[in-house]
Each structure stands twice: as C-alpha cells, then as structure tokens.
Amino acid sequence: MGSYVFMAARTLATVVIGASVWPFVADAYDGMVVRLAHGFLPTDIVARAGESRIYLDFLDGVNGAGLGVDGYLLAFGLILASALVLSTPGLGLVRAVAWESGILALFLAVHVAGLTLFVWGLHAATQGQSEVTMGQVMTAFAVFWALLPAVVGGAWCYWRWLPALRSPGRKDGVPSGNAPVGH
Image (cartoon, rainbow, N blue to C red):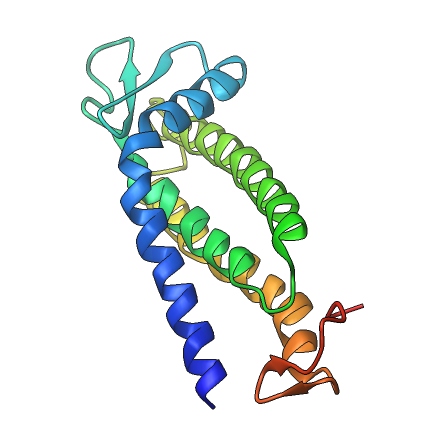
C-alpha cells in the first residue's frame, strides 16, 4: 500500500512542478500553436499569442470581439498527461523522456487542430445565416478540451500503468528486481 501512496504523491508532485513551470513557457508554446495553425485559419480571423492567452481578432471588428483561449486551458491536459507519463512505474528515465516527447508532440498537434476547428466554428457562427450558434461552438470546444486529457490519460494508464502494477515480479506495486516492467 505504501508504494501506491508514493506513486500518487510522485504524480501529484509532477503535476505541481508542471503547473509551476508552465507560466514560464506558456507564451512560447501558445505562440507555436498559433504559428502552426495560422495557415489553416479563415482569412477574416487572426490568432495571436501573448500574456498566456491566444487572442482571436475578427477583422470586421464587430463579430466575436474579445474572444480568445486561455493558455492555461490548453495546458492542463498536457500537464496531467505529462505527469502520468513521467510517473509511470518501471518506465526508466530514457524511455520516460522519449514518451514525454511523444506526448508533447501529440498535444501540440491536437492543440493546433483544436484551435483551427474552434476558429472555423466561430467563423461559421458569425456568418449571417449560419445554423451554428456561438453557444454550440463554445460548448463543443469545452467538451473536447475536457475529454482530451481524460481519454489520453486513461489510455496511457490502461496501456502502461495497469500492466506494470499487475506484473508478477512486483509486490505492492514495487518491482522486485531491476527487470524492465511491461514488456
């Protein structure tokens, strides 16, 4: 039981460290998301990053004034999934860093796609005779962003944590030797 408490504390510590570091990298990450999404956005909406936000500037100056995405909204799933990867039992440092790079790349791609779809949804909602409302776009975006970390984290835990914790060479979640876990 004690090792499970240790793993939970280690995962929580990783979340706190990630959340503490995020303010220092948020603008750079948000800027990268905006630069990568730029070519896919409608021409009447411009995205820009700054102050830990992604701002959406509607060039007509009327529709959607003041809309944007809080950079921390983008980050919470990335931080949670990163904590799960970095705290995976028996993963080892080199493999943890490799998998963490993969998680970063996955979330970057999903953030670019999510921002692009969000902006296109807003574009559609602000057109005169649109069947899509602003509320529907906001709801879809919120549900997508809420489910993303749950799906990625759940898949990771099912694929990596459960086999490592159920391995016959473990006692109370602690490896009995130095053999790699989960192979």
